[in-house]
Length: 148
Image (cartoon, rainbow, N blue to C red; front, side):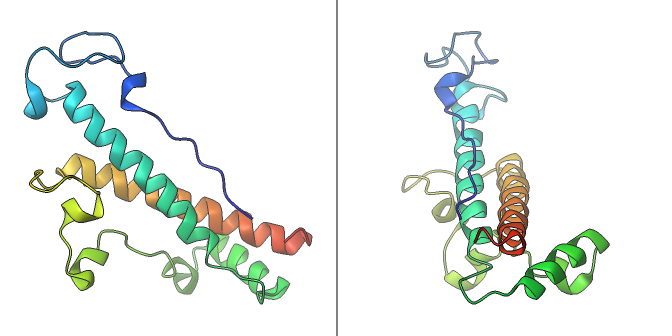
């Protein structure tokens, strides 16, 4: 089962920095201007990467050997806020600590690019977690329904 995620393109968004329509490059400000299309492109990249990676990680929680009772325990544990189940959620930003990578590597930024801002990290973290839980719960539900 593959959890479907919706992604967006930075060219789909008008630039709040200079008012140019979607698909045009910012005339003023550049990368550091809050809300510029440069910054928006980086935030969009964080959003899209996080949603794809979160869904893929959540899909991999259960495999062909997972049982209905395991799926049920996962769903009920999530609904009850059971710490054992809640601790299954990975921290996607912590991978850099043990993988000897920088945050720029995690975000697939080009060599020499500035590290992700706090806003970009939060965008990544929130969307990864949302899609991880969505995919994991959808997969568990499919196991319980016998469609997986």
